[in-house]
Image (cartoon, rainbow, N blue to C red; front, side, top):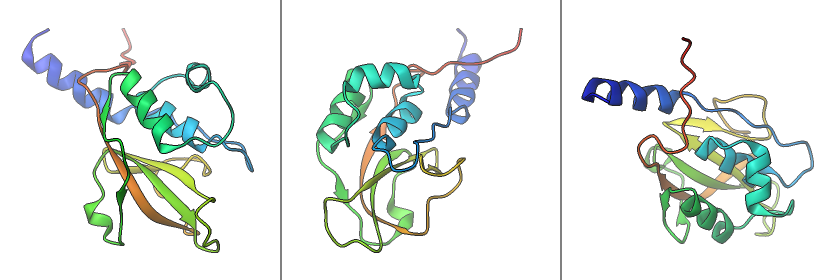
Length: 151
């Protein structure tokens, strides 16, 4: 593949994210974010994770590495400056009304676009959530990205 085609393929891959919605009152937000970040079908993600409970940082980072992505082991705390959140990352948010740490919700940010599995499309996240930490994710070139080119 020539250099120009590689650049075009990377650009095409970065803008093609399959959005996944988690059912209301479910614990699939982490599963959905993993599927969106890696562009993996939800069925494969459910098989990889192996359960339908809430997902932890350790689980998600381990599965990201299994799929060839680079990420840290721990979340980076976030203190309100939204411009410091990386362009591609997994984000942990808590509902504003709860102060207990056992309630959390996973969001993802891919190429500076927010994806909230509890909403019906990309763009932003619920105003009832407060971002508390993030896990930066580095995608390998063309990893598991499918280019839907019409022939």
